Amino acid sequence: MIDLNPFPLRILPRLKDHPALRSLRRQPRIWRDTSDFTSIDYGDIILVDNRWFLVVGYMREGRFGIDEQPKQWVPKVSDLETGESNILKLVFHETYSIKFGDLKVTCYRNPEKEARVLELVRGNPAFMQGYSVLDDADNLVRILDVVQGNRMDKYLQRLGEGHEEYFRDHLVGVLQRFLLSVQAIAYLHSHGLKHGDIRRDHIFVDWDSGHFSWIDFDYDFYLPERPYAMDLFGLGNCLLYIVGRRNFRFQDVLEDPELGEKIASSLRVEDMSLLARDRVFNLQKIYPYIPDRLNAILMHFSAGTSVIYDTVDEFHDELADCIASL
Amino acid sequence: MDDWQRFLIAMDKSETSRRAVRYVGHMARGLAEKHICLLHVYPEPPPDFYTRGGRLDRYQMVKDERAGIFLQDASIILEEMGISGRDISQQISMAEGRTISQAVLDIRKEGGFGTVVTGKRGVSKAEEFLFGSISNALARHARDFTAWIVG
Image 1 (cartoon, each protein chain N blue to C red):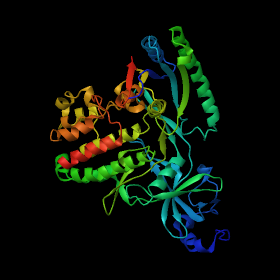
Image 2: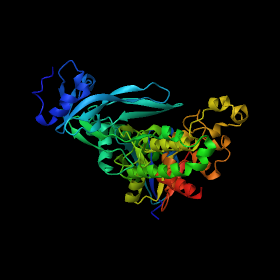
Image 3: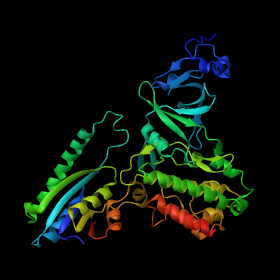
Image 4: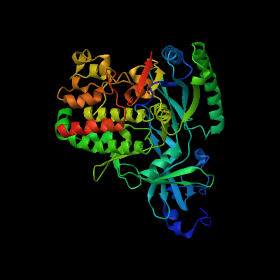
């Protein structure tokens, strides 16, 4: 039996009835200091900003091809006063390296940067919404709204039967919405902030309006001369996925019965990604109906490019002109 | 157009930087009026610097000390080539809130340097995409001044 005395009256109705607590065989712990987030468990309560958040699960994330792991520093919570569902992001300082062949980029989790982005983009539908508060130990806790939508990559799979139908009937509409997402990233950069982890599953498509929203801003990079390079690289990868509705590695092309050795043998080093050499960027070799102008934008991210984009604005302007011509 | 005989050499401790210094020495030693500024710009500390307990004053002190050594070596190269010490200056700066190339361009403008010189490392396209190239950035922004890129 749970002792309800430590809790304020205003949360008792939801606290007593919540399924997460009905099955709990212990007193829920109240966490005002989230430093030791690995000890915070299902059924516990995180008390920040005078809001009582009941932990009901954890967000999961995996890099592509890797099993999704629960992120203990990102609990799914229920506000016991309002019943609202939220996501909390607790402070977790992590550093790791991303390798591109011989090149290495150091990546950091940066809660302060995410807090600054949330502050800047408040009310902007191109971004996940939320705000930041300090817990009792001065950890910067981010309180996020749940994005009511689906991952962009999964959403694209439902548009059209084959690629040609997708290309003919849906691509322009998708690109127009993606262009707003690109503009949103340029807006961050104009304020000296980066997204930090631009991937096709970090764009969510609103279930009702269909607009695109960026999520997850806590990654940061140390690239003093090209601070926004990883964002640009991510945008190129997103565009590649949007145009092709999947990614192609050399082996994928070879094993695809509709493409096979004829297309695979036509692929050159210059057709592959500038940074991830197993990814085909010259999609025109796979889908010959892709217009030159659109393919040319992709090719700026290929190993064969002689000109790289310097800024997201340059990428945006070329993409905007290209979409207008489609 | 600023005074072309005012040279700003953006450098680090690399051999290509020393080549740039020697090149300027050859070109400038016959000039009656000249000034050569040896400049090193270093980046801000990484994002996790403060959470790891780093202190900016110590970071800057270490960077300044290291840069002071190779800038002094460069001064000696120039003096051995016949350039008077009076015509040489040194500057060390952190690129606060901007890229290294932007900082170099700002210092060029503030100092009225008509010629900016830097060494070229010869980076791949992938390296240029991720890490940038000071020499390419200077060449691209060379308006109202001359950029010498020494390979």
